[in-house]
Image (tube, rainbow, N blue to C red; front, top):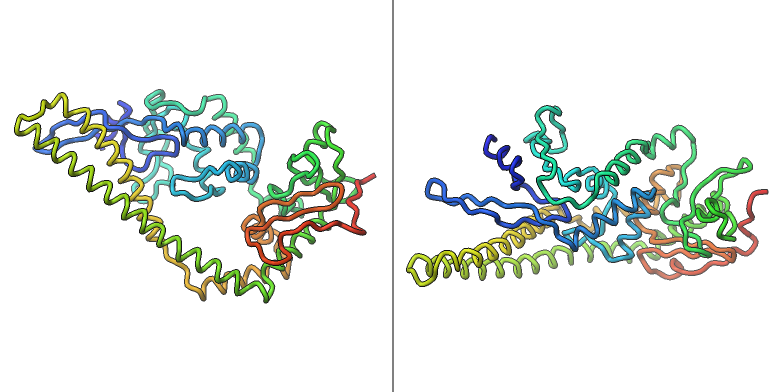
Length: 378
């Protein structure tokens, strides 16, 4: 523990996977008791750091998780594991003070890193690692997150929840549509029109558009589509395992090649065929490459260890989802399904369009709201 604390104070890596936006490079190789101790420092991975800065910038500007997730997906930005970001991963990222350049060590307990230790036991070293996010932006984000009540609490207090939030957008100007209550009625309104009056899109009644979207979602779980949906989810689960194994094999071969190169360099140093000062930088570069490959292999191993759902489990999951959409009494569950299956809902003065993640007949089309004109409140 003492050695790790000293490493933390000097800005060296103390174990674990570095946060998105950082990579590790070998800084020193120290002989110790017949073995070598490798000390690594954090460096900014600019490709990943671009994602981190975008997330913090959008959150600081007042965007919600769904809006951030939509923008990340639109730009094709993925997690290190190659997956879409989720709300939990966004939350953890936004709470990580390492992005301000502060080395943090001994924050969680040995059994559970999420269980926070007493403040006096936590080691913080400002400026020990490269900064990705400025402190003003970080503090602004922390304040906004501390002021947000959980969605379930807001639902209990108001008796109302806008289940399309983060998925519904104005077809006239592209801004998000937000829920509000006027003239004793609940509506979705263009946020640009609400804030600046710069858009002419009309409001649309909450109950109307939500039920229309749930009707479309219900078609995904119809008897005719259920078997197709289950087949699609089963194939996706099986293909993911095969893709992981293929990537693992490729990376393992790369690690073997690096090991061979390092062995040749060590042999050259021992025989005097190459000077250690010449071989040293090459060994450091090869070691850095190996560290990154090993990190990715660990991530793949974790992904592969996750149990693959059986067809029966997937069928039960689909049935439960169908019941939620049919019943519609649990709005929080309805919102969960909309977040899972719906990509985007666009509303303009002519009608609405819904795009789902599963393209069956009649589930991805433009529907003109004949007889259901989205009239604004007086």
